[in-house]
Structures are given as structure tokens and as C-alpha cells.
Image 1 (cartoon, rainbow, N blue to C red):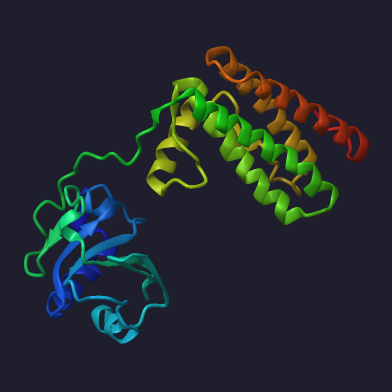
Image 2 (image 1 turned 90 degrees about the vertical axis):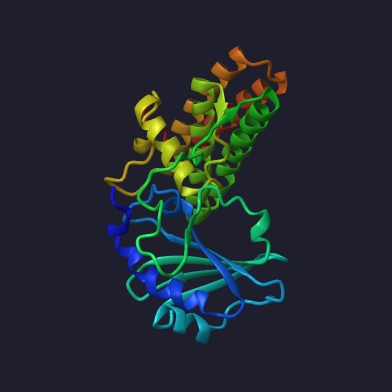
Length: 285
């Protein structure tokens, strides 16, 4: 792929030149997927800006408007530490831009970044795909698996309360957590590797995990909700509970997990089945 043809990179030549003319800016790097030479037309633009030691605040809206040629449509500023100031922006053309000013560039891992000098375009190295470690599931451990199993059943157990109280928004949010917890357990059961919490991983780790699950998971997680009509929450939770019981049995057979986790799974499953029988229609299947 010719990275220089991506539309969101059109802002860089002028913007980088303006950045480097500021007296407190030393260097500018393109990071993220674009800096690794692996971006696509949906990638955010991530800039790492090395600033002088006396830099101690966010760039002002006036400076940002001057750099961009117009004020951003949305701006959120986040202090990521004593040396990092993040400017998260949506530009007028819809481009997502993360501009990080940092005084600790000498300690940063710049190996997969592309340095921009504001003169040569395209910059050297931008079109060359570089090795990526974006998706790197770690070897699973029994303690981590036990913690993930427990988290799944704790969340499932809370669904009864939300359903009986008609807290539809809370139920939807909780079910999303349960789906992610279950997918993590399925991945571990199949590979003995842990992708980590799907609710907190970055977009490229999510992409790698999702692609693997689509090709290997024996449970069609995309059909856990019936989008042809209003979601049937009791049936959805029942499907999650039954699928969770299956994968937890597989993990227990492979790993030495505490016996209490089997008791926990049985207790939560029995309580859920009783709640369905008492308060909701009997789910199909």
C-alpha cells in the first residue's frame, strides 16, 4: 500500500512545517499504525511532538487553529503525566488527530515511528511496512484464567438484578461485558494464550482477536442477540450462561483451577435458571 495516498495524511506537510517553526518544538514523529507503515484510510493520525523542557501546558486553541488552518470541530485535552500532553481532535474533514506534546522523547520507544522533518514529502520509510507487535496474546497462567472465570460469573450473576428492575441500559452494558469476558475465555481455551480484557484493549489488538475468533470459535457470538426484533434479554443471558458453563468446564479440565470456581459456575447457573422460571418466559433452546 502506498501510505502517502491516504487522505488523512494530506494535513501533514503544512502542519509539520508549522510545528517545527515553533520555538519550543524540537522534533515531530508520526506514530501509531501510520507511523508503523500499516495504516489504512480509517486510521487516526498520531503525532508525537518533542518539546523543550520548559514546556508545561497544553497548546492553546489559537495555536492549534494556526497549525491546522482552522479550529478543530472537537478538542479534548488530557494530561497523561508530567511529561505528556494529549490533544485529541476531530478536524473539519473528519480526520481524527492525536497530537502528543512530550518532554521525555529521549526515553520514548521511537523504533516504529516515522520522523517528519517538514521538508521531504513523503518522509523516508513511510511506505515500508514495519514489523508489528500490535496483537500479541501472552501465555496464559492459571491465576489469570481463574480471575477471568470468576469475573465472567460475577457479571452474569448481576444480570438478574438488572432484568427484574427493568434497567435495560444497564443490562445492555453488562451483556457487552459478558460477551467480551466469554470471548476471552474461549480464546484461552483454544490457544492457552490470553489476549487480555477485550473491553480495554486497543483497536488493533481487538482486530486481531476478532479475526481469530471469527475463524476459530465454535460459538457464533454475533448471533447471541437477535437483531431482527427487540433484544430478548433473558434468552440472551441464558445463551451466555450455557456457553460460559461449557468453556469453563474445558478450562477446568485443562488447568488446575480452584474448586470454588466450579461451585460458583453451578450456583450462578442454577440461580439464573430459577430466575427465568420464576420471573421470565422460558427461553428457547
